Image (cartoon, rainbow over all chains, first blue to last red; front, side, top):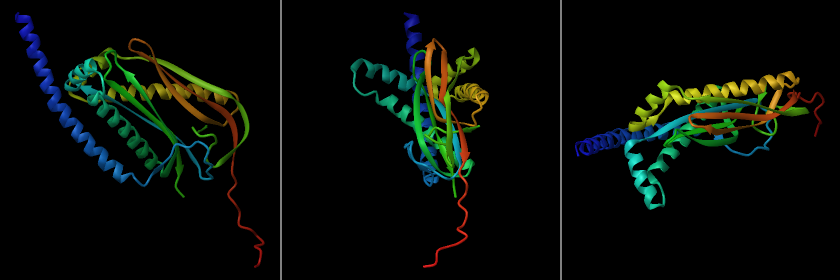
Length: 145
Length: 118
């Protein structure tokens, strides 16, 4: 009986810590992404392979690993049983993708490019129990005139 | 070595296609890193240690590919693609492949010495 109470207490602590910090981290991250995306909007991105360019350029890549928090993990387990959309994980994956593209653009900015061609995104799931997602983005940056 | 994931290298024309080259590396996680990641799983957010680990591993795979291309006498690799697979618990393979080619830079267009009068 004691063991069960301790387990419930631990779960409640992790749940609330996950809720608090997870919320805070997510809001801060989304704010950062909004700012960076607006600032880097001048870099054009496309995913066509066949465009020829006479300006020099080379391949750049970026990656990011983002994990869920305990609150999302618990909610996702419930949603998993009921089926349907796992809304709590959708935001994790979306944030990872946006972050990867922002980093790719930062990389392009560093080499003085204003265009990224042939962009490709790949998503990998890491970790045994899931919840850690890696997004890897790569493309060819073209030097600005 | 010029790298591109398009069908051609920007600013260059392909003179000769040589062969497909690839490089791969299998990496597993560090125990210490895994422990920290477990803690980070509670509060959420980015796992910098893993980001760096994967970046390093990809760089290694790319270096192997570049080494192969160089030994074939290529000076560029086009059409690069990456793929990742989990082959065992806690270990993942990072694989990269592309086509080794020889490219020539496109000459910048010289101004016409005899412009047509119109």
